[in-house]
Length: 256
Image (cartoon, rainbow, N blue to C red):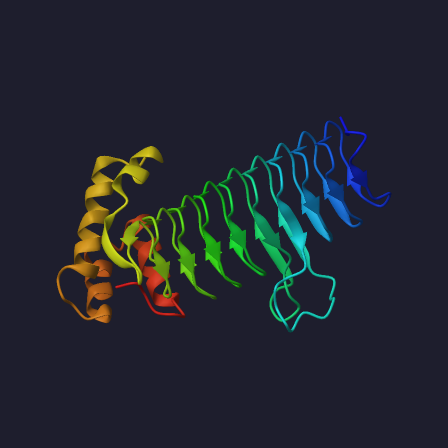
Protein backbone atom coordinates (compact mmCIF):
# COMPACT_ATOMS: atom_id res chain seq x y z
CA UNK A 1 0.00 0.00 0.00
CA UNK A 2 3.08 2.25 0.21
CA UNK A 3 4.59 3.12 -3.16
CA UNK A 4 8.36 2.41 -3.25
CA UNK A 5 9.15 6.01 -4.24
CA UNK A 6 7.34 7.46 -1.21
CA UNK A 7 9.53 8.73 1.65
CA UNK A 8 8.13 7.83 5.07
CA UNK A 9 9.98 8.96 8.19
CA UNK A 10 10.66 6.11 10.59
CA UNK A 11 8.89 8.06 13.35
CA UNK A 12 5.64 8.40 11.38
CA UNK A 13 2.74 6.18 12.52
CA UNK A 14 0.62 4.60 9.80
CA UNK A 15 -2.42 2.49 10.68
CA UNK A 16 -3.62 -0.58 8.83
CA UNK A 17 -4.82 0.02 5.30
CA UNK A 18 -3.15 3.39 4.73
CA UNK A 19 -2.18 4.06 1.10
CA UNK A 20 0.70 6.37 0.17
CA UNK A 21 1.16 7.29 -3.50
CA UNK A 22 4.30 7.83 -5.56
CA UNK A 23 6.80 10.48 -4.44
CA UNK A 24 4.78 11.54 -1.39
CA UNK A 25 6.64 12.54 1.76
CA UNK A 26 5.45 11.84 5.31
CA UNK A 27 7.54 13.43 8.03
CA UNK A 28 8.12 12.64 11.70
CA UNK A 29 5.38 13.28 14.25
CA UNK A 30 2.72 12.38 11.70
CA UNK A 31 0.03 9.79 12.41
CA UNK A 32 -2.42 8.59 9.76
CA UNK A 33 -5.53 6.57 10.58
CA UNK A 34 -6.87 3.37 9.08
CA UNK A 35 -8.03 3.45 5.48
CA UNK A 36 -6.75 6.91 4.63
CA UNK A 37 -5.46 7.32 1.07
CA UNK A 38 -2.65 9.75 0.25
CA UNK A 39 -2.17 10.51 -3.44
CA UNK A 40 1.10 11.13 -5.28
CA UNK A 41 3.36 14.11 -4.57
CA UNK A 42 1.70 14.97 -1.23
CA UNK A 43 3.84 16.45 1.55
CA UNK A 44 2.69 15.89 5.15
CA UNK A 45 4.69 17.54 7.93
CA UNK A 46 4.18 17.20 11.66
CA UNK A 47 3.05 17.35 14.30
CA UNK A 48 -0.06 16.28 12.35
CA UNK A 49 -2.79 13.77 13.21
CA UNK A 50 -5.00 12.48 10.40
CA UNK A 51 -7.98 10.24 11.15
CA UNK A 52 -9.59 7.38 9.27
CA UNK A 53 -10.89 7.01 5.70
CA UNK A 54 -9.71 10.37 4.41
CA UNK A 55 -8.65 10.88 0.79
CA UNK A 56 -5.94 13.46 0.14
CA UNK A 57 -5.27 14.09 -3.54
CA UNK A 58 -2.03 14.90 -5.33
CA UNK A 59 0.15 17.94 -4.64
CA UNK A 60 -1.47 18.87 -1.31
CA UNK A 61 0.69 20.39 1.45
CA UNK A 62 -0.55 19.26 4.85
CA UNK A 63 0.79 20.37 8.23
CA UNK A 64 3.40 22.91 7.16
CA UNK A 65 4.52 25.62 9.57
CA UNK A 66 2.11 28.56 9.88
CA UNK A 67 2.61 31.62 7.70
CA UNK A 68 2.99 33.86 10.74
CA UNK A 69 6.12 35.89 11.49
CA UNK A 70 5.60 35.33 15.22
CA UNK A 71 5.98 31.58 14.79
CA UNK A 72 9.30 30.44 16.26
CA UNK A 73 9.22 26.69 15.87
CA UNK A 74 6.84 25.91 18.73
CA UNK A 75 5.35 22.37 18.76
CA UNK A 76 1.94 23.24 17.34
CA UNK A 77 -0.34 20.79 15.57
CA UNK A 78 -2.75 20.07 12.73
CA UNK A 79 -5.63 17.69 13.48
CA UNK A 80 -7.85 16.21 10.75
CA UNK A 81 -10.81 13.96 11.56
CA UNK A 82 -12.43 11.19 9.52
CA UNK A 83 -13.87 10.79 6.01
CA UNK A 84 -12.66 14.10 4.63
CA UNK A 85 -11.93 14.63 0.93
CA UNK A 86 -9.04 17.05 0.31
CA UNK A 87 -8.47 17.79 -3.35
CA UNK A 88 -5.45 18.90 -5.38
CA UNK A 89 -3.06 21.70 -4.29
CA UNK A 90 -4.70 22.37 -0.90
CA UNK A 91 -2.53 23.88 1.84
CA UNK A 92 -3.30 23.31 5.53
CA UNK A 93 -1.03 24.96 8.13
CA UNK A 94 -0.47 24.07 11.78
CA UNK A 95 -1.52 26.35 14.65
CA UNK A 96 0.47 28.98 16.54
CA UNK A 97 1.47 29.27 20.17
CA UNK A 98 -0.17 32.70 20.30
CA UNK A 99 -3.59 31.04 19.89
CA UNK A 100 -4.71 27.52 20.78
CA UNK A 101 -1.76 25.87 19.06
CA UNK A 102 -3.98 23.77 16.79
CA UNK A 103 -5.57 23.94 13.39
CA UNK A 104 -8.52 21.53 13.47
CA UNK A 105 -10.76 19.94 10.86
CA UNK A 106 -13.65 17.68 11.86
CA UNK A 107 -15.38 14.96 9.86
CA UNK A 108 -17.05 14.52 6.46
CA UNK A 109 -15.80 17.72 4.87
CA UNK A 110 -15.42 18.24 1.12
CA UNK A 111 -12.43 20.50 0.41
CA UNK A 112 -11.94 21.35 -3.26
CA UNK A 113 -8.75 22.27 -5.12
CA UNK A 114 -6.46 25.15 -4.10
CA UNK A 115 -8.15 25.76 -0.74
CA UNK A 116 -5.90 27.38 1.89
CA UNK A 117 -6.61 26.83 5.58
CA UNK A 118 -4.33 29.02 7.67
CA UNK A 119 -3.09 28.61 11.23
CA UNK A 120 -5.50 28.16 14.14
CA UNK A 121 -8.59 27.69 11.96
CA UNK A 122 -11.41 25.41 13.06
CA UNK A 123 -13.45 23.63 10.40
CA UNK A 124 -16.32 21.68 11.92
CA UNK A 125 -18.26 18.94 10.08
CA UNK A 126 -20.07 18.42 6.77
CA UNK A 127 -18.74 21.59 5.16
CA UNK A 128 -18.05 22.27 1.49
CA UNK A 129 -15.20 24.64 0.62
CA UNK A 130 -15.18 25.19 -3.13
CA UNK A 131 -12.11 25.87 -5.26
CA UNK A 132 -9.72 28.61 -4.10
CA UNK A 133 -11.46 29.36 -0.81
CA UNK A 134 -8.93 31.13 1.41
CA UNK A 135 -9.22 31.25 5.19
CA UNK A 136 -6.97 33.64 7.08
CA UNK A 137 -5.77 32.68 10.56
CA UNK A 138 -8.10 32.06 13.50
CA UNK A 139 -11.23 31.54 11.37
CA UNK A 140 -14.04 29.23 12.51
CA UNK A 141 -16.30 27.49 10.00
CA UNK A 142 -19.19 25.71 11.70
CA UNK A 143 -21.25 22.68 10.66
CA UNK A 144 -22.76 22.34 7.17
CA UNK A 145 -21.37 25.61 5.81
CA UNK A 146 -20.87 26.00 2.06
CA UNK A 147 -18.31 28.55 0.85
CA UNK A 148 -18.41 29.32 -2.87
CA UNK A 149 -15.32 29.42 -5.05
CA UNK A 150 -12.77 32.17 -4.33
CA UNK A 151 -14.45 33.13 -1.04
CA UNK A 152 -12.07 35.06 1.23
CA UNK A 153 -12.50 35.05 5.02
CA UNK A 154 -10.73 37.61 7.24
CA UNK A 155 -8.89 36.69 10.44
CA UNK A 156 -11.03 35.82 13.48
CA UNK A 157 -14.30 35.65 11.52
CA UNK A 158 -16.89 33.00 12.38
CA UNK A 159 -19.28 31.49 9.83
CA UNK A 160 -22.40 30.03 11.42
CA UNK A 161 -24.12 26.71 10.81
CA UNK A 162 -25.70 26.18 7.37
CA UNK A 163 -24.48 29.55 6.07
CA UNK A 164 -23.60 29.94 2.40
CA UNK A 165 -21.43 32.32 0.38
CA UNK A 166 -21.57 32.89 -3.35
CA UNK A 167 -18.58 32.82 -5.68
CA UNK A 168 -16.02 35.55 -5.04
CA UNK A 169 -17.45 36.66 -1.70
CA UNK A 170 -15.32 38.44 0.87
CA UNK A 171 -16.15 38.14 4.58
CA UNK A 172 -14.70 40.66 7.02
CA UNK A 173 -17.42 40.12 9.64
CA UNK A 174 -19.20 37.14 11.16
CA UNK A 175 -21.83 35.47 8.96
CA UNK A 176 -24.80 34.23 11.03
CA UNK A 177 -26.30 30.75 10.76
CA UNK A 178 -28.60 29.96 7.82
CA UNK A 179 -27.74 33.15 5.92
CA UNK A 180 -26.74 33.24 2.26
CA UNK A 181 -24.39 36.12 1.42
CA UNK A 182 -22.63 37.25 -1.75
CA UNK A 183 -20.35 40.07 -2.86
CA UNK A 184 -17.15 41.81 -1.82
CA UNK A 185 -17.75 42.88 0.85
CA UNK A 186 -20.40 40.22 1.37
CA UNK A 187 -24.00 41.29 1.85
CA UNK A 188 -26.93 39.15 3.06
CA UNK A 189 -29.35 37.95 0.37
CA UNK A 190 -31.70 35.33 1.89
CA UNK A 191 -31.57 32.11 3.87
CA UNK A 192 -29.94 28.92 2.61
CA UNK A 193 -33.28 27.15 2.23
CA UNK A 194 -32.05 24.44 -0.13
CA UNK A 195 -29.17 23.60 2.20
CA UNK A 196 -31.61 23.29 5.09
CA UNK A 197 -33.81 20.91 3.10
CA UNK A 198 -30.77 18.77 2.30
CA UNK A 199 -30.13 18.53 6.03
CA UNK A 200 -33.73 17.47 6.70
CA UNK A 201 -35.12 20.68 8.15
CA UNK A 202 -38.92 20.66 8.00
CA UNK A 203 -40.84 23.19 5.93
CA UNK A 204 -42.20 24.66 9.17
CA UNK A 205 -38.65 25.19 10.43
CA UNK A 206 -37.59 26.76 7.14
CA UNK A 207 -40.52 29.17 7.24
CA UNK A 208 -39.65 30.08 10.82
CA UNK A 209 -36.02 30.73 9.88
CA UNK A 210 -37.24 32.95 7.02
CA UNK A 211 -39.22 34.99 9.54
CA UNK A 212 -36.16 35.23 11.79
CA UNK A 213 -34.16 36.44 8.79
CA UNK A 214 -36.78 39.10 7.99
CA UNK A 215 -36.66 40.41 11.55
CA UNK A 216 -32.87 40.54 11.50
CA UNK A 217 -32.40 41.95 7.99
CA UNK A 218 -35.58 43.32 6.44
CA UNK A 219 -37.52 45.16 9.14
CA UNK A 220 -34.92 47.93 9.58
CA UNK A 221 -34.71 47.22 13.31
CA UNK A 222 -31.73 47.96 15.50
CA UNK A 223 -29.83 44.75 16.16
CA UNK A 224 -30.79 44.66 19.84
CA UNK A 225 -34.45 45.18 18.96
CA UNK A 226 -34.37 42.50 16.27
CA UNK A 227 -32.82 39.99 18.67
CA UNK A 228 -35.37 40.85 21.36
CA UNK A 229 -38.21 40.29 18.90
CA UNK A 230 -36.72 36.96 17.77
CA UNK A 231 -36.49 35.89 21.41
CA UNK A 232 -40.07 36.89 22.10
CA UNK A 233 -41.56 35.16 19.06
CA UNK A 234 -39.34 32.12 18.58
CA UNK A 235 -37.21 31.73 21.69
CA UNK A 236 -38.52 28.23 22.39
CA UNK A 237 -37.05 26.86 19.14
CA UNK A 238 -33.51 25.51 18.84
CA UNK A 239 -32.89 27.18 15.46
CA UNK A 240 -33.83 30.58 16.88
CA UNK A 241 -31.54 30.04 19.88
CA UNK A 242 -28.72 29.11 17.50
CA UNK A 243 -29.15 32.46 15.76
CA UNK A 244 -29.50 34.39 19.02
CA UNK A 245 -26.43 32.81 20.62
CA UNK A 246 -24.36 33.49 17.50
CA UNK A 247 -25.37 37.14 17.32
CA UNK A 248 -24.92 37.78 21.03
CA UNK A 249 -21.39 36.28 21.01
CA UNK A 250 -20.12 37.83 17.77
CA UNK A 251 -16.76 39.54 18.25
CA UNK A 252 -16.25 41.06 14.79
CA UNK A 253 -19.78 42.27 14.18
CA UNK A 254 -22.28 40.73 11.77
CA UNK A 255 -22.60 40.72 8.00
CA UNK A 256 -25.74 42.86 8.01
